[in-house]
Image (cartoon, rainbow, N blue to C red; front, side, top):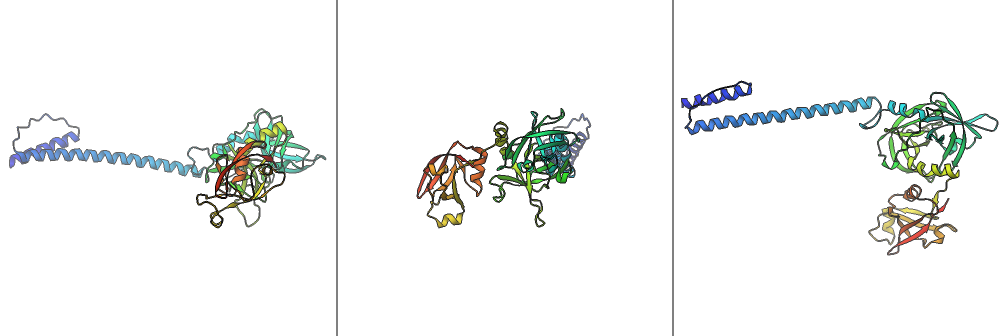
Length: 387
């Protein structure tokens, strides 16, 4: 028994010594006692397990430290005005990046008197500047003021009153910068955005917020759809850029609810509408929006249950009237048809007809409608008219 204990203590000493970085030259006599061998094996195994546990603990501590660094960075981002956007720019960086491309628009009438104010941004270095149609509608000439105070005269190139988009042209200063347009289809609800403009004539004001909702329709204002944001948009902001955290134009700030009972309700025309409209305004001075020529209502699930419609139909646009002399009147569409999709773009929501038409199609193009008529699913081709 004494031999067993001695050997066990010797092994412990060797293990501890190795752990402390010591070098041993020990000759262990041949051990024939099975109990001693088992003790040696157990001690060595326990030492291996301790080392493994220490490695796991070390890795855990490293991961915790990395997580702590990430949280610290997010807190820093929040303090600097960039909520939850590790890849985007800070508000101050967005402002510095785009300010050579943002202008204040002064509208001047025939008597050379200023009659309106708004905002705008440089679309291209050819001298084209984008603003709202309602900003320029009362003017005969226009004065663009950059954020450094320099001024240039501008003329109206194209105007789209229906879409509320206008294009001005001027001889831009050398330092002017065209601001890149974002893909508004890639915007996410909740992501940070920044509005820059001249509310109440206060040139170069920046406000921040988030994308509150996408494809928002407000029929009493326009047939188009908007980006909804809680970034402050006040009189004078109209025509200025709504910027993503990458410093790209997500939309044109257009209007906001100003009544006392509303707060944080601003709207911007999406950049993908700008991409379709502005090149045509530059070339032709006007833009035509597509039109099918129907009246109808969006079917919700309750209405679907009350109609004799196949159970597989979950949404659609029910045609209540075919407009005389419109495109639909020259097609096979009928009152009572239910439009399910347009060129495979499914009609899922109340506003989808306008969203699909105005984002992807132009007057004169032929589209294919998937339609439910009674118990039949049919396809109907129709050439789009214009508003």
